[in-house]
Image 1: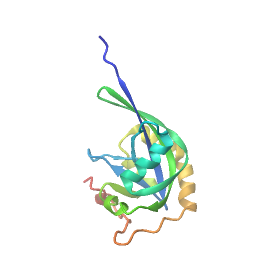
Image 2 (image 1 turned 135 degrees about the vertical axis):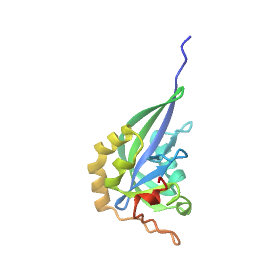
Image 3 (image 1 turned 90 degrees about the vertical axis):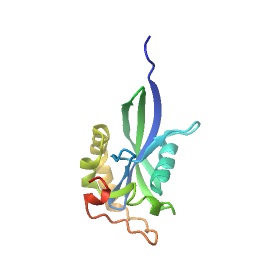
Length: 159
């Protein structure tokens, strides 16, 4: 008897925030783009917007579809549709994420920090668009009490 593989639909954002790219640290301490499950009745773009807010505390506007990656995990295949997104503003939860499980990093750091080759490939495809957004976008005003600037990789909590 053949074991069935379940397909799990997910969506996420490749989020530009000012001149930085937003990465999320997983429970396994991997750096990834913020993402999560698509809920019943929800489109992938709606899920991406919701997941970015839930995982980072940032409200982000979807710009365009960046691509899809599939990851095998046990008896599941996770299919993640990523969207290029521009952060518009912070929610009060931003201060609970920034520097803890969410990190604004320079665009040129992201390739070396991302865990999965497939997401690095998607990043490479959309990098010119991200650079364009980073040059025209201004970082949303920071919440009082927490600075978002990161000055080095040790601050990412990976060492």
